[in-house]
Amino acid sequence: MATETESEWDVKVPDKPLKDKVYFENLKSVVIDTEMCSRCLTCAAVCPGGITVVNNKVDFPDYETKCFDCGACVRVCPRFAYEPKSGLGDHIEFTAGRSKRFSGQDGAMVTELLVSAMEMGMTDRALFAGRDEKWATEMFHARDPEQLAITTLGGTKYTFADVLPALKEAVKFTKSGVGIVGTPCIVSGVRKLQQEYPIFREKVKLVVGLFCTENFHYDDISSYLKAKGVDFSKLVKTDIIKGKFVSTMTDGKVKFKVAEAEAIVASGCNVCTDFTALESDASCGSVGSANGFSTVVVRTEAAKKVMAFIREKGYADFDEGDPAQLGFLIGHKQKRAENIKK
Amino acid sequence: MKKVTVQDQSTVEKVKCHAAAIGVAMKESIYPLTATVQYPRQRKKMPDNFRGYLLFDPEKCINCWECAFICPANAIRMKEAPNKKYYPTVDYGKCIFCHFCIDSCSGGALRTTKIHDVAYKDMDDMVTLTEEMIEPPEIIREDKTLVEYQIDKKDLQIKKTREVDYLFVDEVPPSVEILMVSMCIDGASCIGCHVCEQVCESGAISSAIANGVMRMKIDTDTCTGCGLCVKECSMQILKLVRK
Image (tube, rainbow over all chains, first blue to last red; front, side, top):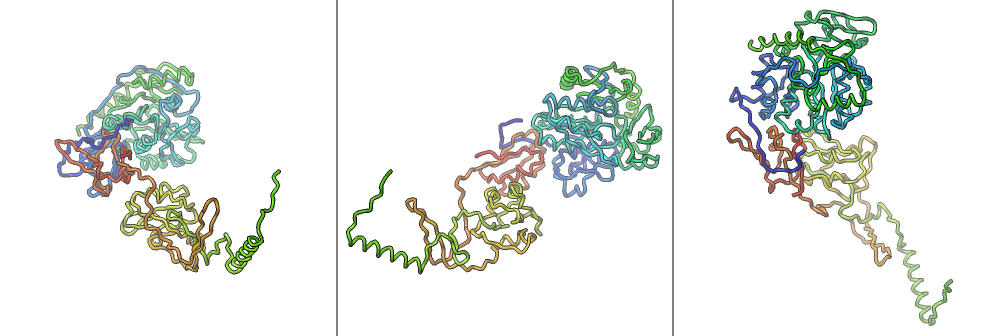
């Protein structure tokens, strides 16, 4: 961090489409009311006021009087001036891996990447989305590889987590850097934060993206799963395999087609074309690799260093990945570009 | 080995010494000069920087919470007052009388007294509310004599005077005054929320918008170094530095 101090400095003032309204109202009219909002909560991460989530929507109660009108939310929102991205993107390496140390959704490579970055000294903490007994997400700051023995940290939850508000806390306390994992919208939010504010550029060292087709609000998915007969106290793992949502419980499985749950897909996902988290340092997911392995798409030098460290220490098994398998889902998400115009 | 020999004294001198010894003995029998302070009839004289019962002046409080943050015993809790400001309350069951709170108070709202003898009926009463800290507690003064220890050439002298000590300290000037001023360490990360400008009591922080750029400015001459803006800055990019 810069050590020199200054008594005068300049702050960018972004343009307002609605001239005489506060910035949150601008954000609300352009992003939230048009159902473009991805609920990545990048705005909440910088908002000095009270941007929060009300009824599954990003909201700011009493924004007319409480909004500071600073424009930070508009500056960082990835959907305010939305540039949809799609495809597999530039990458250094396409591979598949299986961690020998951790157990997660498939090959637990996300956990492995974040923990290895911690062991290398690149970061001193990593943010994981844990869950409680009812499968609601709660953020967890991991500062020691041993903490990853908590089994609820790994595995997909198929619901939103408040990653970015937790990132702001982590950035305040970290000394060397922070590692973070998130869906493509969260990754875009982090990049936007880094573009606008040096404090995030310096402190966020590793961003792992997840392959993502869509996400669900917690209230919707939990009541939907309950209606399907899923008992949360026995639920071990949720997964999407070949178009089917599979809930694995201690005493059996509940399966249904994801297409059936179309109605409860979060509205912001309908305009998202990014399947592979194109802006991440490394993207991970199960598609494109054999059973039990995670696909890893290495995109930046930072992630390359971490992969080299994992190979050197022998923390994971590696296998060939098949980029062609991703084609269908990338194409599936590209079709959503039509929704943006609406 | 050294042998102690009796001083060669004349008879007159011997009589004088005996008379003086009898005099001291008679004086002691009437007014015994003990080192013990006969509290509560007597009270020891305390220095002005004695760490005693705390008094609080809400007029001077700038709501920085520094006293609550610094308290090593966690005795200070902030409570919301009717005017929406937060003022300290002290739990004397926890207080260790270190007076870090007074040292950290940038507005000078907290001050010490020489009161050390406050009795409570139960533990709940020991939580002293803000209203109770504004006025000094009710004290029943039984003391008539002020005892003062004075060191005179390695010898401890006990001075007793027939007067009642004033228990309140108007102001103790700090031994070393360190002038601090708020500065920005990472201007590019500023989101421009004006929180610093709004909380600043001395109006040292100003902003002006020109050509789509907002210029934030800290006037280092008017900044009192209270640290409120540093605490409130949402991006944590302000820092107190020495002037």
